[in-house]
Length: 152
Image (cartoon, rainbow, N blue to C red; front, side, top):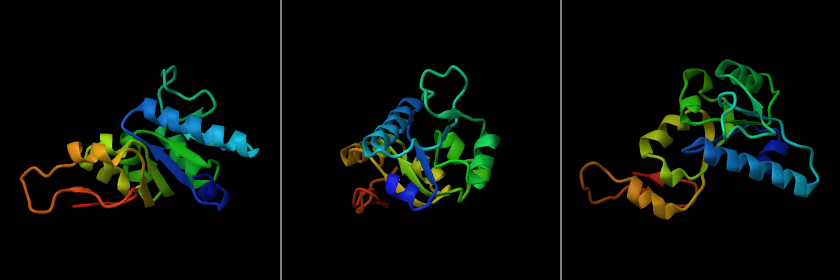
């Protein structure tokens, strides 16, 4: 993720819950500190006084976050699938990292996919076998083909 940021690419973070997103933001800041890099500029969509609003991220409303991304004021934008599925966020980042992707429904992952040109699915792929099943049994099960792609 840090390589994408230093290459000038915009990065998004999402996951199945605010707790997961907060943990990934914490990891991003920790890696920046360990590398001696300056702190990344992270905007997070969460309500004021939300227990999982990261202390170092800037809390932003949907409109403000979208504008800050467009104007290059952020290195990373973070929010739930409700943020990334919104129309103004279509193609808003170069890469969207979906943490604990196996815990999200396939529909949820597909809903956020339009926000980025590249989608990176993080987490334990064994979860996907319990969550990403077709409604009707088929000869080709839905599942992960690698750590970063999903096929049906």
